[in-house]
Image (cartoon, rainbow, N blue to C red; front, side, top):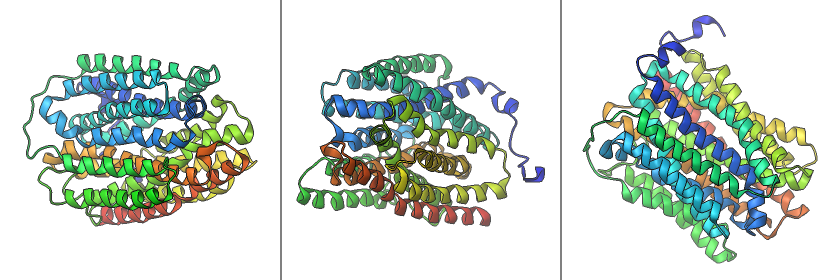
Length: 468
C-alpha cells in the first residue's frame, strides 16, 4: 500500500489524546476491557458451568440471555445519557454490571445463572452504549480510526488474559470466582466514571423511549432462545416463526415511530447506515456459534483443559486485533476494499470450521478461527467509522449507541439459532461422539447463509460510500 493511500484527515496518536481527551479515552478503554474480557472468560468457563449446573441445554440461553440484556440496554443508552447525563449513567451501568456478576456467582442452578447473565447484559450494554456515545461526543471523525484501533488492542490484551483467567478458575474448580473478580472491576469502573466523566447538562430531546421496539426485540430473541431448550417440536415450530415475526415488526415499526430506536435511515438497506447496520447484524449472527460451542467441543474431542481450549478459541480475537491494527492507517479506497474482503472471510471461515471443528486436526480449527477473526478485524472499525461520520447532529447519541445494539442483537439472534441447532442434534442430552460431531458441524454451518447475506450488505455499503 503506498503512502499516498493514507488519509490526511487521520490524526496522529498524540493529536488524538491531546486537548483533554485522554480521560475519556482511558474510561472508554476500561469499558471495552470489561466487555472483551467478559466474553473471553465466560466462553472459557461455560463447559464447567454446564457440568456443575447440569445446563448443557442452556448454552445458547447463557449467551443469548446476556445479549438480550445488552440489546435492551444499548438500545436506550443514547436516550438515557441525554436525559440523566453521561456521568450518572456510566456510574449506574458499572454498579448494575457488578450486581449481575454477583447473581451469577451465587447462582445454584442454570435459570438463576442465566438471570444473572441477563442483569450483567443490561449493565454491560449500558457500559458499551455509553462508551460509544462518549466516542462520538468527544472524538471528531479524524480521530476515530485511532480510537477504534486502540479499542482493538484492548481486545488483543483480553485475548491473552481472558482465557488464562477463565481457564485458571475453571481448572481449579472455581468458575464462580470469575464473576466475583468482574464484580470488583465493575465497581472500579463506576468509581472511575465518577472521577473522569465531566458533568453534563440533561437534554430533554425529542420523543420518548422506544419501549415497544425494545420489547419486541427482547421477546423475539427470548422466544428463539427458549425454542432451543424446549423439548416439544410443536412448540418449537410455533415459537421460531413467531419470534422472527416479532423481530421483523420491531424493525418495520421503527421506520415511522416517533420514538426511534435507531437513526431514521437505519432500517433502509439502500442507505449507508442501513447497509452498515445490516452488515453488523448478519456477520455477528453468523459467527457466534463458534465462540459458544467450540470450548466444550475441543475439550471433548482433543482432551484439552479449559485454559487450552480457551486459547484456541481466542485465536479469533487475536487475529481480529492483528488485522485491525495492520490496516488502521489505510486510505479511503482501501478502507472500502477491506470491508468487502473482511466480510468475505466470515462465510469462508465458517465453511471450513463446519467440517473441522469436531475433527481430529486441531491446526485446521486454529486456521479457521484466525480467518474468522481476521475478517472482522479488516472490516469492523471502518464500518463503525463510516456510520459515525455520516450521523446527523441530532442522531449522534442514538446512532452511535445503536452500533452496539444492532451488533449484539445479531449475536443474540445467532446464539439462539445455534442453540436450537445444537440441542436438536443432541447437545442438550450430554456430550457423546455423535452429538459433538453433529454440533460442531451445525453451529457453524447454520451461520453460513447469514454471513453470505452480510457479505452482500457489505458490498452494498461500499458502493454507497464510493458514490458519496
